[in-house]
Image (cartoon, rainbow, N blue to C red; front, side, top):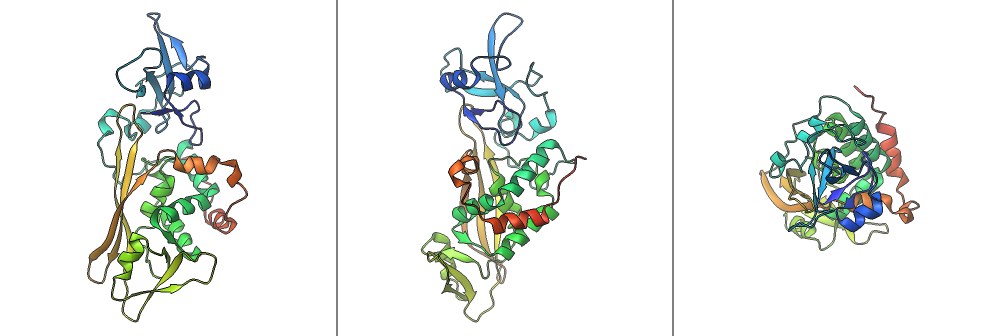
Length: 304
């Protein structure tokens, strides 16, 4: 892995694993640097995905590849206790470095980690919507986002074991927007998605009377429209010392003839969402109406 944390929380910042950054962030203090029983000195951190202890390789001694983190597989003094369950679903686990997550898998219990990500979605719902809207070149109605959030909650996607703060907006779309109708939603003029939809014989676009003149609303020109969003192939690829490569396939299906009329691979940035969240200058640019929806329909989760 390329990044480490110093706090075992979802919202804690990720730091690149380099000798200079390690020294600046930790000051070589315990528990991030420790003397082993054989008197060798090792450097440690916290996995940004499963929040387990990791050893940082290439910090004190130069290696042939970029410095990286690897799971310790055991407790480390002063760091979070080793949690084998979260490790099982970590993309950086050696057995998972080429594994495709299965959306049917859910954690059997509500943990502090699950609650933290749930509350992150609730407090940042407008930014989740912003990122997905930008990625997909769409603008959807309030009723659409309300339905998507309800679908996410009803299916307990917050228990999806592959969910992290990095992929939260994308997994929200992956399950919350799944099979939702595109009718009446707005699409960015000239985008690949807009152009693909425009070719459909029953699709028309009408101008939108608001400040978003870069978008047009999809309507029917008189024929029957049955177009829906679909997301599939959530994949994670992890290489030692490199940033996590994570993606999903975004499709528009015409259910009238069971044809896919558009598809595109959406790649996730490991840092994008939390960078948006943590930019202080964005605090005054919030979409309160989206936050109100989240507040209304997301009751507190309890440990179980």
